[in-house]
Each structure stands twice: as structure tokens, then as C-alpha cells.
Figure 1 (tube, protein in one colour):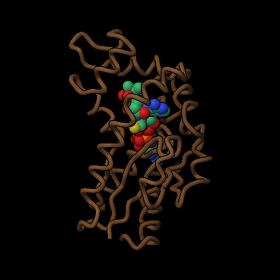
Figure 2 (cartoon, helix red, strand yellow; figure 1 turned 135 degrees about the vertical axis):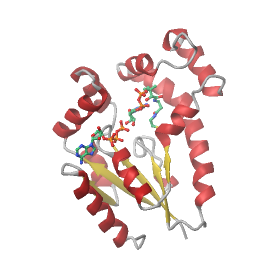
Figure 3 (cartoon, helix red, strand yellow; figure 1 turned 60 degrees about the vertical axis):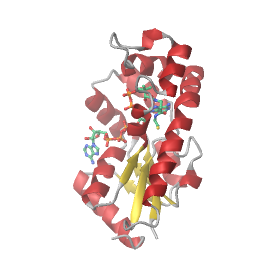
Figure 4 (cartoon, protein in one colour; figure 1 turned 180 degrees about the vertical axis):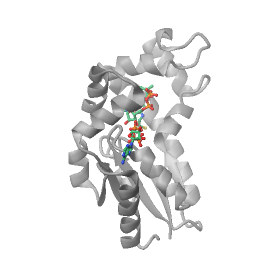
Length: 199
Ligand SMILES: CC(C)(COP(=O)(O)OP(=O)(O)OC[C@H]1O[C@@H](n2cnc3c(N)ncnc32)[C@H](O)[C@@H]1O)[C@@H](O)C(=O)NCCC(=O)NCCS
Ligand SMILES: Nc1ncnc2c1ncn2[C@@H]1O[C@H](COP(=O)(O)OP(=O)(O)OP(=O)(O)O)[C@@H](O)[C@H]1O
């Protein structure tokens, strides 16, 4: 049986970093962020709805989505964020389920759904176990600003648009404390997967 693991956390808590560790262990990862990029490509249904709702101001000259501009709009305004989520999330969920079911009862001992908004979007029924990558707020802000070269106000807007990662850690079946080194987090992951009889 293939165990379906929901990997989540908050922005810049280290989900992608832990996703890479799963790949190193030959455990497949389905990345909701990547799917959310695929479904807004020009010509996709969600792309047309985004242009209808937000206008061409959120597009580059070449017609592709200006992610920075759309991000500014939706992280500064909850109503706009809800409008975008209503357009994109159903398309992401459809594709995620398709990919997940392709792995079930396959050879892999587990498949991972990397879903940033797993708890906010109440997607716990899509997975069997939840794993949260935890980081304290100060480290989260520092790493986010460093990675995205973003301003403090923009980084804080994104962090505040999600459930606090400390709350997610309380809801999770297992937690990786990612405040230390990447190696220390990798050891925590292996210990959890050993407990779950995956490795
Ligand atoms: C607004 C967009 C265009 C900004 O793109 P950008 O390349 O700057 O960010 P990216 O997509 O890489 O997201 C980075 C992180 O932001 C956070 N985030 C993204 N969208 C949201 C959202 N709607 N609500 C809360 N947090 C979000 C997540 O932690 C995500 O991992 C993009 O984030 C988007 O399309 N969001 C709506 C779809 C969505 O909710 N995706 C995240 C979960 S599937
Ligand atoms: N243990 C760690 N030590 C130092 N830096 C780290 C650690 N874990 C992650 N990072 C760095 O912190 C930043 C955020 O990590 P990552 O991109 O994995 O977070 P994320 O949760 O996937 O973010 P997002 O929600 O935006 O997808 C990256 O630049 C990453 O290299």
C-alpha cells in the first residue's frame, strides 16, 4: 500500500527543501505550487478567468502572467486573494488527485503531496498523514526576504495571509523543526519515515 503524505508548512518554512529530501529517498512528490503555475499558463481555463477578473494589468507584454504584479494585488487584499483562490484551487485539486491516484497501489512505499495551504483549504482528506515543516517566525521572515529579495512589508503580508506555522504544527501527525541545519532536518525526516515504516 502506498502511504499518501501531506507535506505542508508556511511560506519559506522549508517545504521545497524537505521535498528535495523525499526525492533523494526516491519518494515521489506532487508539488501543488508547480501545478498552480501549470494551470495558469496562457490558454488554460484559469488563465482566461484571471484576465477576466484582474484585467490585462497582471500580464507581461508576452501575455504570460506577471506573478509579481498579481502577487502584490492578492497579498494586499483578502477579497482579491479569495477570488484568485476560487479560480486556481479547483484546477490544482483536480490535477493533484489525478497524479496522486496514479501512484496509489504502485511500487512506491509513499507519495507526497506538497500543499502549502493544506490546512487553510481543509485538504486533510486528500492525504493519510500530515507532515509540517516548522520554523520560528524570525527565521521564516529572514529566509523569505533573503530568498525572494523581498521587502519586509511584502514578506510579512505573505506570512500573515496563511495560518501561523505554529498552529499547523499542532495539527500535524509529525513535525520537522527546520530551525537548524538542512542535515538536521534530513535526519528528522528519516526518523519520522522510519517510525512510519517507509524507510
Ligand atoms: C499570487 C501568485 C501568482 C504569486 O506567484 P509567486 O511566483 O510570487 O509565488 P509562488 O506561486 O511561488 O508562491 C510562493 C508561496 O506563496 C504562498 N502562496 C501562494 N499563493 C497563496 C495564496 N493564495 N494564499 C496564501 N499563500 C499563498 C505559498 O506559501 C507559496 O508556496 C501565486 O502565488 C498564485 O498563483 N497563488 C494562487 C494559487 C495558490 O494558492 N498557490 C499556493 C498553493 S497551491
Ligand atoms: N534548514 C535550513 N537552513 C538554512 N536555510 C534553509 C533551511 N531550510 C530552508 N532554507 C532556505 O530558506 C528558504 C525557504 O525554504 P523553501 O524554499 O524550502 O521554503 P518553502 O516552504 O518551500 O517556501 P514556499 O512556501 O515559498 O514554497 C530557501 O532559500 C531555502 O534554501
